[in-house]
Image (cartoon, helix red, strand yellow):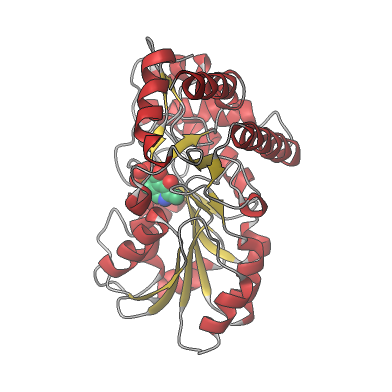
Length: 370
Ligand SMILES: Cc1ncc(COP(=O)(O)O)c(C=O)c1O
């Protein structure tokens, strides 16, 4: 699959399957009219199924961060108070996005690798001073998976509005938006959805609109105001269901991927991914590496691991070796884990299968030859 001599095993983007790549390479079409609406609808329907909601799906032509910006700015008014679970680089970005949108954002901080607990969130929320909770499901910097079902239950006890960064968990983990009462989920095309980078799906549950319509008009921009997206889908559903020119090829490729993924039952898919990820972690550990996240809260899509004892400084050399020897591209750590860990993404069938085998074999050969 890998382009030329490289194979992407970073935590997104992923190497594209041949059908997705072919869809990307087709001639450009107009971003309106029946042919376009069919593609757009196919992509949105596939994404809605993963979110387990009857809500709206908007596909912003941008990376995942822009979707988060639009979601935070649309759901909360400047000055509102939100609790942000921060357990790594990307959840810290959620804090920056909240503050960038003028919110009074308070972090609930944990060491990288750790996850939030329902009790920890409860003790913050019981002060009664929060309007919202922002949480990242799978922290891509560490591979830790927050127990979002339990945490959402606590947020619901306090009537707090929930926004979830599902960028690296979506389509790989249960995401029961309606059951958990999550107002907005944001993800990105280049992860487990199997598409190229460049689209930020924003999924808005029916319960979110009362708040979105209430928080006012100031400081929300236009493209990033989700009411703009809603009005176009309502006014021109069969012709121009979005406010602006779309990245038509990327969305066609994304639609191809999610349509193929639809053939598999959700529970079967999630169980398959979780089992493959657990097997990969166990193989890596058997070589002497230590995963950053505890096994009980490990993400099915990302694994970050420390080198074996005595080789603590060798993560950069290992990453280079994987690339030079077999063309396997993995990522370094982020923030305080920068040169201390090797980070792998497994969000595609290739990454769970042949790339995982190649990773383990090449890690073994590194340890034997160094
Ligand atoms: C959990 C999480 N949130 C946000 C982002 C930002 O997404 P993007 O780089 O598409 O803007 C990422 C990217 O990897 C991520 O993993």
